[in-house]
Image (spheres, rainbow, N blue to C red):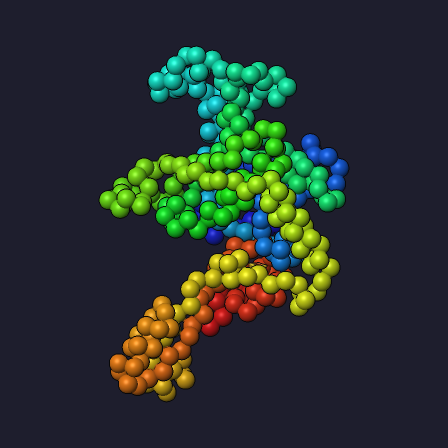
Length: 333
Ligand code: SF4
């Protein structure tokens, strides 16, 4: 069993909440075979192979690291209860939906009972698909009519930068691939609940104007999605039996590597000693221009820092990680 620490003395009421394991793998309802979730498939191949080699009895995590996951789960739970236990009909009336529409909505109906004019809504619906000797599973957050919605509690950076768009599309596309009889729309929506939204930043029109907002994304075709899953499973199989030195490495994108920077030293001797640089640039061209203007000095490239390993469950066993981090999680100097 994984050891739990409480390094920040989080008080009992919250500590117990943080230790609830709300995750349901769906294993009880799954057809026989090795079960792989959509979210696992989306992890870097190296990470998902090495994670299985970790001796969990030697692992530990701190309660404080559970806050984001539990808060995310709480949002999902609360939205689900609003539609299954809450007075969603009254809420829709307040939003000026006509009674004729409200009457057509059916919550979590048996798909065989859905009539032509019904508007089914499914919450936290899990699906399974057998493919290439494994069972792929995914649980969609919300489906209305034939359209899929996913709730994300995340930073405003995810909205403004689009850094997670590719992942959202891939995840949604795999859910449609698993549940094609339910998800028929080509467009999905991500419903954002921002964890760091600040009103004073809304003067920027690119910043989300409210604490919750949604964006639409076009899903991949079923054919492209199946091809992606096929390639990924083949990639995992091809690497699973290899020793780490032969195994595929995590890419810069998978490592969440930050951009390289270029340090300008007026005094080359200082550069050799690794001291503080005179100026730092994001691009080599800018650094070079500066050096030419000064008619002296040297430029030293500093590779962007890697971030993903400290969140990776394979951290303790991964050899690639040792290129960037010490065993205690601090950066190699
Ligand atoms: S520890 Fe880092 S390099 Fe190793 S699998 Fe995890 S993310 Fe990849």
